[in-house]
Image (cartoon, rainbow, N blue to C red; front, side, top):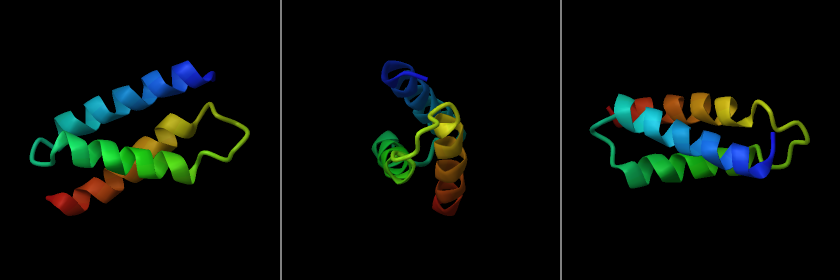
Length: 65
């Protein structure tokens, strides 16, 4: 997965999480996704980074309910 594909995939992650968590501001969701992405940013295999970020961010956002 190239950098531009990863950026698009992460943007889609933010969109999906914003739909699932309408009570959480989009800025908070973007911040959580960015933090989770940074925690996985050193890996060599990039194909699964967006899905791993989405799962970790989703778990964190559940606490905002």
